[in-house]
Length: 310
Ligand code: MG
Image (tube, rainbow, N blue to C red; front, side, top):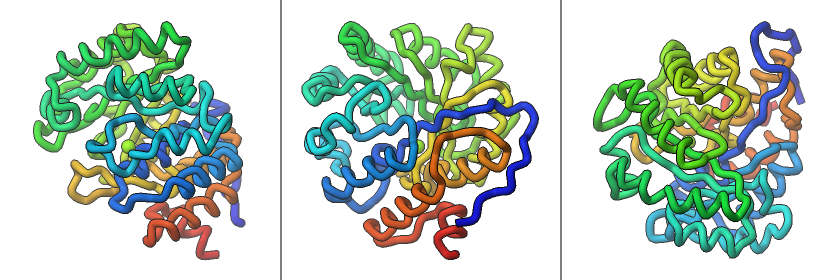
């Protein structure tokens, strides 16, 4: 398969850790519900392709997210491959944490919102109430020795509120980190952010002692900005990037439903710039082509489209 010509770029880290969200964020936002054994094979194939961190599933109630209602079964089928510090799961509350712990999970992610409207729509709570809900989850997770990530949604724009003031994002970020999160993931949930905005937010977080080594970035490609924004964050010292194999997952709150940054598009850009990821692009493209077949529609990833057609 074709690979990019490698010409090292200045100002990027030597190595980037890709945080693969396809099995969770990707499949959660697909309209089709994928069978448990397909999810299990998906995680196995992603691991075999060298993805270092894979968010495997979600312990959100099946009534909220029917696509991932089989979390316990997925982890049982994966066995040792499905748990560990590099296999986080999404957890909304203490009940979700209990279920995750019963499955032997060793890393979790909670999900806050930078805006009141999205907090109410996604969590049925105000921002204050949701932080209060997460507090005992993080506390108990840390007591159990788990690694904890805190997502912040709507960092760069909100479909109901429009612009989101940077200080408002910083406030929620600080509150999640103060609960005891190990890492923060900044989500551009509707994909409206641009590069200067990324820099401004990272700088503002730095002033509150939240440095790039504690931050992951999570961009959506709705407006074609995901890769540009990612490279801007890397130039500012971030080295953890969220992406979904094949660009899986739209966003139910963004009408055009363009999803996550495709892992293949990210890998192509990084490898071409001389940045190591540990990912085998051929194996990843084969995996995404296979998953597109399972979903019955082509991958929106440009790199998958280009390489799979060869
Ligand atoms: Mg996403």
